[in-house]
Length: 205
Image 1 (cartoon, rainbow, N blue to C red):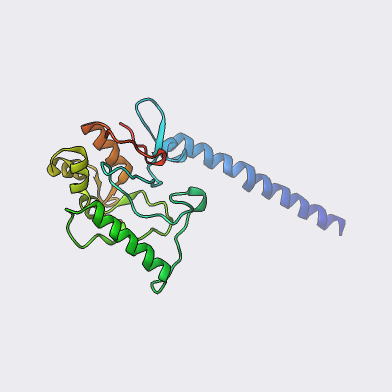
Image 2: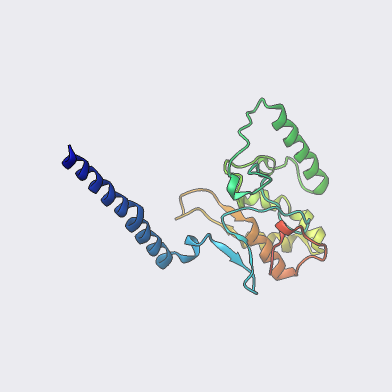
């Protein structure tokens, strides 16, 4: 009996060291060596080195001069510690009220945009952290952004078009636009808007 216990203890210790210490260290080291940007959260920095967001996590933009992403049900919005969807079904009164309020807001903020409103702008993603829109969802906001920045819609459209990412390897997924990347590109080309952004909406040159 004692011998069997010792064998079990040794097996547990070896397994703990291999899978709990050695393997994580090897994987972490390989990730840092081969993909340091991705391994450290795909953080985006401005010219001064300050972190302005992550390429993988959406954030709230309230200034009309910026693209707005999808609504978020993660915590108070885009909270990486509370990632998840609302889990509300199609018959949910709460979901209908929230979507209806978003539709009213979007139509008020984008009076010159065509109808219908792209569905992604009134629906939350499964993670609540989606940093991307379809090109259609981004182009739909052109008139509002152009008016806020006092430039022609064609120039805003060109910036968005220059930041459309195609399918991975040409076959996987759909074309998409990273909202933070486009907003930073808008600031680089046209300067930061004069009206003040909320802290969570800060994009940078």
